[in-house]
Amino acid sequence: MTQFEEVSKQSSLHPKPVGLVLQYGTAGFRTNAKHLDHVMFRMGLLATLRSKKTEATIAVMVTASHNPEEDNGVKLIDPMGEMVALTWEGYATQLANAEQDDLLTALKDVIKKEAINMSQEATVFVGKDTRSSSASLAQAVLDGVSALGGHSKDYGLVTTPQLHYMVRCQNTQGKYGEATVEGYYNKLCQAFIQLTKNASNCTDDQKHLSVDGANGIGALKVREMESHLKKELHLSLFNDGSEGKLNHQCGADFVKVQQKPPTGMKMNPGERCCSFDGDADRIIYYFTDSDGKFHLLDGDKIATLISTFLKELLKQAHLDLKIAVVQTAYANGSSTHYLENTMKVIVRCTKTGVKHLHHAAQDYDIGVYFESNGHGTVLFSGEAEEKIQQLAENASTDDETKRAALLLQNTINIINQTVGDAISDMLLIEAILAIKGMTVQQWDTIYSDLPNRQLKVKVSDRRMIDTADAERRAVSPAGLQEAIDTLVKKHRQARSFVRPSGTEDIVRVYAEAETQESADALAHEVSLTVYRLAGGVGDEPKPLQ
Ligand code: 16G
Ligand code: MG
Image 1: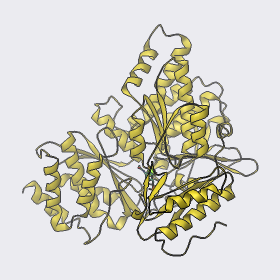
Image 2 (image 1 turned 90 degrees about the vertical axis):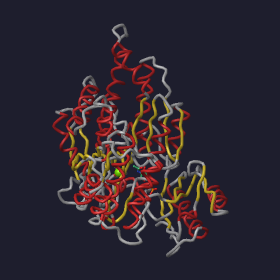
Image 3 (image 1 turned 90 degrees about the horizontal axis):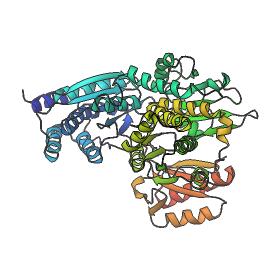
């Protein structure tokens, strides 16, 4: 049987529902798990082609992140652990939407366009989250890989960032680390222990952190990692999947959007807590104070903490490296103001979606990128890593410089540079707080967030809304931006923008202002404008209570 006959035969076992159209969105395909079997098989095929093309290992992750348990999704991971290249997102959409009889034609089209040598070997890593649909969907991916004669390695249950990490390790011949989950824990935890070993300011109380695992894969992996941390960090794990439902009233997305604690978590006043999302590539910190007030430390606060720490170390090490923070339009205005005016670091704003931030962060010696929702990491250029290493190893370096260089070196090792990683970010944040002897309350007061509100508006076709300037301005429909500008002027310290969601069939509205009442009112007024100018469906948006 030829390769293509095999694909034909196998694909009939993963038939596409006629007429179903899906799009490879911001974070891959994502929809109800019932509609995804054929997509998974075809992503197995596509990943095999991508592996042949790049002559490297590629990975496929089965997850729908913070979406409800009934949904699932899939993302492709490129050789260095980054998101798959843009042109291949297009191929993914074409392949997923080809009707059953047209699949071979669509496949051959990719092979021709990319001039793929079909006799080249291919290897695909596969991972999945804890959703009940994930096992059979991951099997469909594996079937796709074998139909095209590719090799596969099934990592089973892993977090999304762990799979990104494995690919990078594999394709750099172990230079980045060992391509096993055990290797991942060893590298990160060793770095954590090295970073915190001289943190004399740190009391036992301060070594405690409560973690909301969103009832997902992150919870399993935190459990698995705990033994590697010895006594250096005491974790209390909640929403570990033993009772509650995945992402249901818990997890990083819930906490960030609702601005309240997750259910299922025991919180004492002042205690440091964090939430992961459903595939553990986002993290959010928070605490309640003695008056019961909830304090959220989101991606912007995390970026500020990390970049302050790095900047101090660079100064102590006398290293002249260019550091920048990359944010999106969702970044709280106070964070941008603080970073630019007090910390005096370069701040860049990109469109929403990890790939955009990641890309921009690559332009600097050190690029710290975080979305407010808690997805982020730090990228070091090859040259920056080399300079830091030389300094750490140079015998004539003086004590203070050497200490700073060693801390920088271990910071590099604790970070998963492929993508945002809740586990790695958590360890880095915990290490920084320990080294600085800083409480979560002190971290929180670095700057005060402007009150803000996010709302959704349902419209008949969200593509009617087009944006420019990193999504900060709407260029269509006509009149929308002018209307927003007029509304913003009615409030103090206000800002608002709208954008079509890349993951849901809705338009998102963001507003911030001097007071919560003002932010809520502005968000509502802008929602109404979107509803009226962009073809809202259902009831008109109501004012917030
Ligand atoms: C996805 C993106 C995230 C982005 C979010 C926006 C990745 C891995 N994740 O979760 O970066 O913030 O989508 O969703 O790229 P939205 O377009 O629905 O607002
Ligand atoms: Mg996620």
